[in-house]
Length: 111
Image 1 (cartoon, rainbow, N blue to C red):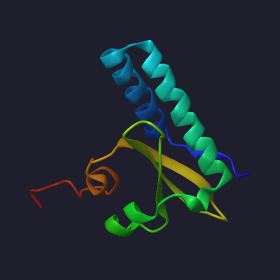
Image 2: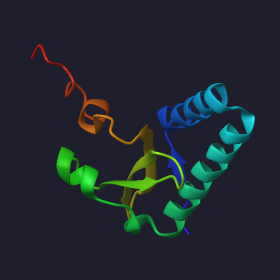
Image 3: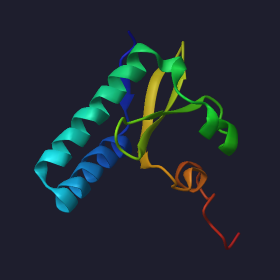
């Protein structure tokens, strides 16, 4: 099993999303979210190639995959290759503009 490496932004996203659920619905939901999010990372570690390549195809970011967090409208976004392993870059809510968040300058309308 390949261990996943979470970038600092992915760790921040996890803590921030848990805080959001805590503020909206209390500590039990926040705890459940956190547990499900960590389980999703473990699932990625067991089967990194099973994540959806759709986000990578749409954004034209090679090797980008996503994996849902069961029961919550969020997904982990990560890169995977046999040589480099699993690089988890973000945890984002479904419906977010992935290109604007993952590609520097993609959200700039003035250009």
